[in-house]
Amino acid sequence: MRKTAALLEKRQISSEELVKQYLTRIEEADPQINAFITCSGEEALAQARDADRRRARGEALSPWDGIPIAVKDNISTMGLRTTCASKFLAEYVPVFDAAVVENVRKAGLPILGKTNLDEFAMGSSSEYSAFGVTKNPHDLERVAGGSSGGSAAAVAAGEAPWALGTDTGGSIRQPAAFCGVVGLKPTYGRVSRYGVVALAPSLDQVGPLATCVEDAAILFSLLAGPDRRDAISSQSRPFSLPEWDLDSVRGLRVGVPKEFFGSGLNPEVEQAVNACLGELERLGAQLQSISLYTNEYAIETYLTIVTAEASSCLARFDGVRYGRRVEAADSNTMFAKSRAAGFGPEVKRRIMLGTYVLSAKQYKLFYEQAQRVRALIQQDVAQALKQVDLIVTPTTPNTAFKIGEKRNPLEMYLSDLYTALANLSGIPALSLPCGRDSRGLPIGIQFMGRHFEEELLFQAAYAVEQTQRRGEDA
Amino acid sequence: MIDRQEIMRIARLARLELTEEEIEQHRRDLNQFLASCAKLQEVEVGDTTVGYTIPAATQTLREDELTPSLPQAEVLAGGPCVEGGFFRVPRIVEEGE
Image (cartoon, rainbow over all chains, first blue to last red; front, side):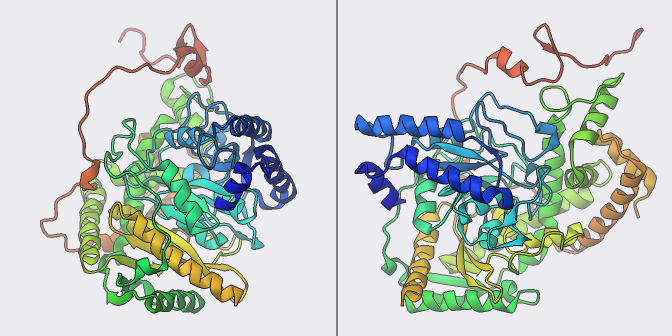
């Protein structure tokens, strides 16, 4: 992005030209890929012309003024349809911007459009979208991952230089891994969720997707910061871009948890991750085998909590204040009919599971027990991060699967096997592309660190990225 | 095992109208889900306290200040049935109550 920013600064390219290039690419590629639900080309061009005028006056809002972005469609954009990939909100136009959208607008970034996702971010393949599946740009018969599949595919296909996603159990990192781009789930509390349609408020975070580590860090620097409109937003530690120095990993203690390298891990993924670990060691990091025994319970704990919170959050979709309504003689029937008509099968499934685990008789047995296990998971992760500075694992057990391949919901839920832990414990986690399998599909490596230590994740990922690039050039 | 009646009870709580086919589907899904969650019951949690601990830095207090709210007309414009500045809903109080 630095190169693009320099070209804009020297006026060798205009923002209008840049936005036109991306819109042309969207026109060419998106009929196959389906990364976008809504393309806001006209508005983006108008915003680009504003950016060009600011540059001409020497009043650029930031170095990135005029570089466009794509936004996941569960993030509110004032005046621009925000569907959450649900029939329920097919015509919903927000009257305010999400905090992260305010932030990117303040930096001058034109918005290219809204990207596809699993309905209300519930899923790991973008197949549960009411607007059709997003296809993987590396193989159109395969999924782009999810739920931020549209954002990851748009960046991978060159339809957008970077994008915003949301991550509740892996929804930024898993599609980033499947599409071969960089994705960060920030520390819980570091980025405001104001204006983001909630899935599970104790887990949700907003984060960047980009083609390289430095771009992800730049976008993250625009997003991070306090916001009083999000009750858990952190007041401390502004994020500034780190030193990009390969030496920064020298002496770092890197934990490799054995539980993430067991059965179920694709050998090609394991090999690629091990090769990256070797690179880190050559750069001077100290690898240590560690244990995160609680990961065995992560998926079930995650599912119990995410369905419970989702069933509560989605109570607001009642056919009264926004979205669809099916008329009926009494209110309860109207709610039940509107929700039946508006929600897709996966959303209904999670509402039912969540309502069950929260119901008076089952609460203690399921929800409360899951909360206790979650506390154990947090202790386990905190303990590990006392021994080491970083934890490195594969992002996903496998590369992108075929569209329609996973028919059983439980099988789909296992896609988050390596990613849910970071949401349950609130720590930051980044996925970096690390090679490809024999089919040419991208593989992702995950870096996890202590709360508010995103800087270290970026530095370590940058070091691995640079050694990979040198390998490619040689 | 969760039966059909239990599914209908949960659906009422969730304000979700289900077709016959969906009732059967949810019965299967919920039973499968509960079977997979059984292993959580076996975890020794000891005296672990319930309650999610968020990073300390996020716990702050602030002054309660008045700020403008969203314009009423714009907010109402998103509603499926609006009348005289209100969201209109079916009758909720029966006559004589």
